[in-house]
Each structure stands twice: as structure tokens, then as C-alpha cells.
Amino acid sequence: MKRKLLVTTVAIAVAVAAAVGVRANQPDAEGGYEVWMVDQSDTTPDGSGTLYVYDGASLNGRATAKAVPEVIDLGGLARDLTLQTGSPGRRPHMMFFNAAGTHAILSYVTTGHVLFIDGATRLPVGCVDVGLQSHAAFPAADGSFVLVANQNGKLLQRINTDYDTNTYTLDNAAELNLAAGTTPSGALRQDPSLRPDNAPICLGISADSRYGFITLRGGGLFVVDCAATPMQIVAEYDKATIHPTGCVAVQVGDKMYIVSGTGSDTLAQTHADLYVLPMSGFSPTPAATPNTPAPGWVYSEDGAAVDAHGAVPTKHGKYLWLADRFANKVTVVDTATDRVVNQFGLVVPGLSGDPAPDLLDISPSGNRIFATLRGPRPLTGNNPGFNNAVGSTPGLGVFQVTQGGRSGAFVGIARVSHTADGSGNVDGIERADPHAIAVRRK
Image 1 (spheres, helix red, strand yellow):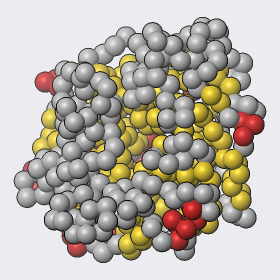
Image 2: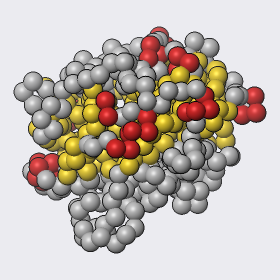
Image 3: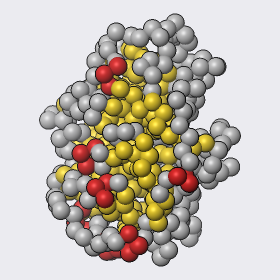
């Protein structure tokens, strides 16, 4: 049953550290990690982007403003490696680390490149061009493959991975066309009424590396057997059941949470939705009945200035945080009851009047959660009619986790800036647009 979220019944906490008793300079209890963040803005004419690597110990409350990152121009060796596929990679957009933390997987949203970067050396060690557009590339926990959402190609693709030998191979036999053919129920995969636009947006892979959860731009969801060759749909959901432009699929225990936000210039209104699916409900035998197992609808905010986009579980998975880049807030869900237990705002005087938090990750100790904060000229996910992804303080945001994950406070920003046009000429206009983020243990 659809559960409307009435914000008047939820505690709205102002995220000022002093107001909630947060010790803003409290060190993270577990060191030895880095936070990687990518500015996808066009730092060079070919749009190579910039990688920032921060030592976790430097991201400490208001002192975060003084953090000095390693700055890696992706227009250098990374561009050279993507060029070996025949064209340069443009606009690095999403990034994840493999389970061992040895390699970052970076996808380029304007082109079809998936770049593999050695975590210790920061050197690009492999590249695969999947074709039209690589919006997201997500690694399986067992290290054997990466799933790629080829967005405008409307394909789900699999790259076989061997991180020890840096061997990365596109498995053409595994490819699944999301727009052509029929589903297990016999319906068209892409159907004007059921699923009008099957461009894959984001994806998640089950902890056992068996099932992929693929959100679709026009609404709906496919659950796919990743081990099959070719990959096959085992469960199908329509747009009435899962709203459009879902981004982020996060497994917590025996549940998969699906976040649906705006992020499209074709929608008439903004929305924020959270669904939950039971992981026990899927098998390699395709389900002939659509929308089964039925998802739970945790909450919904439609028609307001909202756009849920990033999500991360707190340590031990007791709570799930959802960042809203339009409303500048975090919604907290209790994963035992699947109910909203808190919301706290992120507009903090003297820190940021419009942070626009996008994607999230968490420190190894669970004391801090990090967010990419969008800039005033976002290159992706923004509807110009709403400006849902526009922010005023581009950079890396630091949230102190409180009450065991039930609440938190926005305590610092490591700002980044890019004030050049596409030819490298300084023009004084802020163009920085952080998007990808991932935490790596050293």
C-alpha cells in the first residue's frame, strides 16, 4: 500500500552541530580510509573530469574546509586509455569500488566507457567501451563481473573482471536488450502503458552476486539473473508499481531498497519514493506474474520540491539514509519496521544555503557519512523547470552520524571549484559539478 509521508508528523531536525549537541571535531574512530570524489564538469574540451582523493582523517567537522586532496586530472592517462577504444571518455559520472577495495570502477555518462583505476597507485589499468552510454557500472561482490547500465542504448551489459591480472572483457553473449522482446509474462519489455522508456538508470547486485535490480527511466523495474548467458529477466514491474527515474538499489540484510527520484526533464512534477523488496522472493525461474513479489511502499512525497537520489545504510544496517538534493534534507528509515523515523535539514547558516546533496557513502567506523554536493550548473539529472539538482556550494559534504544512525548533522564541506569554459579559459563562472563518490579502505 502506498504510504504518503506527512512531514508534519516526522521530526524535522535542523542540522546545526551546536543545536543537536554534536562534537563537530570528534575524530572518526576507525582510520585508514580515503574518500574519492569526481567532478564531472568539463575541465578540458573533451570533458575528462577531475578525481579528488581525500584522506579520511582530514574530513573532520569544520576543519574539512582545509582538507587538501590529491587532485588527478582524468584528461591525462585516463584519457589516453579511453582513446585506445577509438574515442575519449567524456563526463565521468558514477564510481564504485570492488569488494576488495583494490580498484575503482568509473563510468562515463556521455560515452560508453568504463574505466578501471588501481586504488593504491591511482593509475588507470583497464578500459572497456560498451557502446552508446555507460550511466552506471556496478561490481559484483564476488569480483567476477561488472554490470553496466547502457542508458540510451537501452542495454544491460556484463564485463567479466579479473582484478589480479587487470583483465576486463565485455561479454557480448551476456547482453540483454531491455527495449526489444517480451518479459516472462509475455508483455512487451518496453510498452507505452507499462514501461514507456526502458533506458536503465541505476542498478544494484544482490550480495550473492546472482541478481541485478535495474531501474528504468520511464518507470518500472527488471530483476535479472546475472549468472545466465544471456542474462534473463526473472521479475518485472511496471511504472505504476515503481515510479520513473529510480536511482540506487541498496541491499540491507534480506531486503532490497529501491529509490525513485526526479532527475529527468520530461516529468511534470518532482517526486521521492522508497520501495522495499524481499530478497527471498526471487529465483532463476522467471515469474510469469508481473509485480511479484510485491514491493512494499515505504514512503512517497510527490508534487512537492523533492528529489530523493542517494542512499546509504548506516553501520550494521539499522537505518537507511536518503539524500534529497532538491529539498536539502536527509530522510531516515528504520530498516526493521520500514518506516520513516526522522528527517533533518541540511541548510546551515555559514556553511551552505543550498547544498544539494546527491550520492552518499559511509566511513568504515560509521561515524560519518559523505555526500557529493552539486554546483550551480549541474550537467546531469537536472530539470530546468525545477532546478532540482542545482546547488550553491559544490564539493564534498561531511555529515556527523548521531543517535546510532537515527539522526545526524551537516558539519563540513571540502569545496571544489572549476571556473573555466570548455577550452580551458577562465571565465569566472562556477562550473564544478561533483557527482560520483566512493569510500576506500587503505
